[in-house]
Length: 135
Image 1 (cartoon, helix red, strand yellow):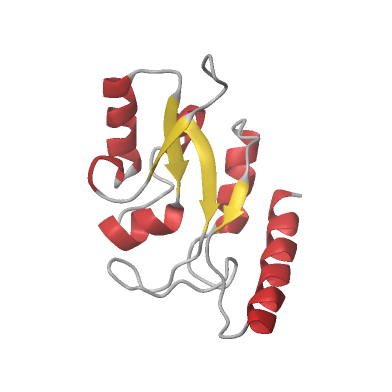
Image 2: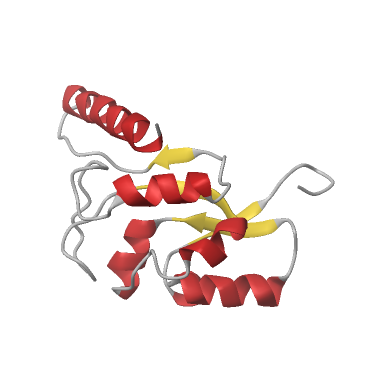
């Protein structure tokens, strides 16, 4: 962390951070200890159709924030169910990032549901899934 205790995280959102490989290239070019990656595996699939696991071990030291958002349907499919209900293999990914040294936040970006009560129920499901996944 820098003088002010802040780290800027660039989210995996297409372009220069669209794939793990591009993120590694961006980190090499930026080469600053106060800049990292806001890793969102679902965005890697949605925007690029890429594999969020590819080069993940190399990317781990640069991950400063982890979004846990699920996705169904691959590239350009705007289907984002509650984490644990989609196609992103968080049961494998989360232990991998924890074992690789990540100890930061997991932020749930989206949950299913039309009403506040339905979304609250989905948040409980997301929490329970994540608690099991990280042990």
